[in-house]
Every structure is written in C-alpha cells, then in structure tokens.
Length: 194
Image (cartoon, rainbow, N blue to C red; front, side, top):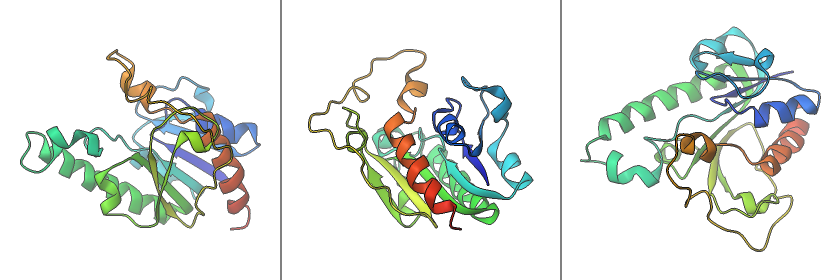
C-alpha cells in the first residue's frame, strides 16, 4: 500500500503514517522539514500519475479558496480571477487523484472549493485533543468520516489570532497531531479492506 500526502512540506501526516508502518510519501513544491527520503519536491500533478496509490490526501493551497479571503478573492474583487484559477486547478487535482487512487481526501479550511465537491465533513482540532478552534473540511472519496477521538471542553483561537511573520502561512497550515493520529488509525484501517 502506497500513500501520498500532497501539498505537505511539514510531513506531520506523512511521518505519522510511516511510524505506523505504512509506505507514505509527502509532496510539495517546497523542501520538506521532515525526512527528504520520503518527500517529492515537485508539482503534485507530476507525481500522482507515476504510481497506483492506495490513499491520496491533498492539502491544496487555500489562499485564494478560503472564505476568509472573500474580501480580496470574492466576485467583483481585485483577485477574483486568481480564485477562479485556483478552483479550476484544485478540481483537476481532485479528479486526477481519483483516477490513480482507491481513496482520496481533500483538506481545506472553510472554502469555496467545497461548493464543487461532495461528501464533505468539517472537523475541529478540539475534537481530537487540542485546545484550538480551527474548522477544517475534508471532501471524501471512498473514505469514512472521521470520528472524534478526544473532545476538549475549552478551546481558543490562537491560529486565527496569529500575528504576522514570515512563517505565518506555513504554521497555520500544519496538521494537528491528534487529527493525524485519527486519520492514520481510522483511514488506515479502512484502506486495508479496499
């Protein structure tokens, strides 16, 4: 079984799969902060067709897609063409992934992309043991919805209130370890049956 984590340079999810004895690779146009032996530094569209994957999890850039950017990327706004191009690219990525894998998930925050996809589930880090409020959506193809593993009563908005810095975008996009653990356990068990 081969697993591809697309648009992930942190390798949080990739390394969690590897620790559970899966053959998992990350792919991003950026170098990884993890183990480069398990990372493709390349355009995800060039890597997907090279293999037959058991599971592909995609984290496409949300800058133009996120609802929080409507002020700049919404209809009649200065960067709306960038949003339309991002939607087109992300939908092409989704369709390609489904051609080369038995199971696919596409992750984004609250996003316009989910208007074009089906079987979308929203989760929160505080459902998986973290004290953070950051709604995240997953479009699912041949995968079950994630079941919360550790609901935390009190949570905060640190991600939303993160101040400007050179790593802000990168740091806001990292997968929470509790969510990564749930994905590996729940989806890992599912793909073994495919």
